[in-house]
Structure formats: structure tokens, C-alpha cells
Length: 139
Image (cartoon, rainbow, N blue to C red; front, side):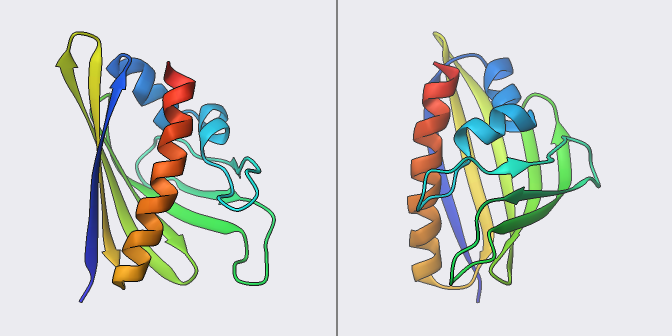
């Protein structure tokens, strides 16, 4: 039975700035990095439904260094969804942005299709690191 990871991240920014950081490939490369090396992950992401994309980094003995996906939903500037395939597992990512007022935005992450509790915790760790970098980018 697959598992789901949900996380919420409050940001002091605008919905538009946060949306841009989630959808602009150059900005994505600034916060989506190899968890082990910190090396930025080159990508060809575009927020277009049906668009296939990849994030690429240096491979290691456990992983080929590639995350592949396909954009499923684009509702600018509040919802973005895509598949996220890595290490022979395909997940679905859904980002929901909500204006909270007072210069605050909540970024809600839902990642479905995760195979094990260990994989959920690995994803939680990875997103936590990446979202800390995203916070620096939009500050």
C-alpha cells in the first residue's frame, strides 16, 4: 500500500514570487540540489501540462542522478502538480500556494505513491533541505 507525505511551509513572500521559484527552471536550479553534494540540479522544467522534464546531477553507486517527471496540473499561481520518478519509483507531487495575509504564503506539499515508511522519511528530509534553500531564494 502506498503512503503519502504532506508538509506545510510558511514563507514571507508573495504568491507570485513563490510561484516563479517553483516554475522557473533557472530558479529551480538554485534550490533543488543534490542532497549529498549540494551540486545544483540542471533541469528543463516548464509549467506546461503534458511537458516531460528531467532534473540531472552527478550519479553515484546507488542512483543514476536523474529525476524525471511530467507536468499534470498548472493553475497559476495556486496549484502545480507533476509526476516525480526516481530510483524506479513514481510519485505524484502537488504544490498548493495559499495567501495568508500580512506578507505570508503557505506552501503545501503532498507527495503520493511512496512505497515505504523509510522512503517517506527520506522524502521529508530531502524536501526539508530543499525548502530551506527555497526560503533563502524568495526572502
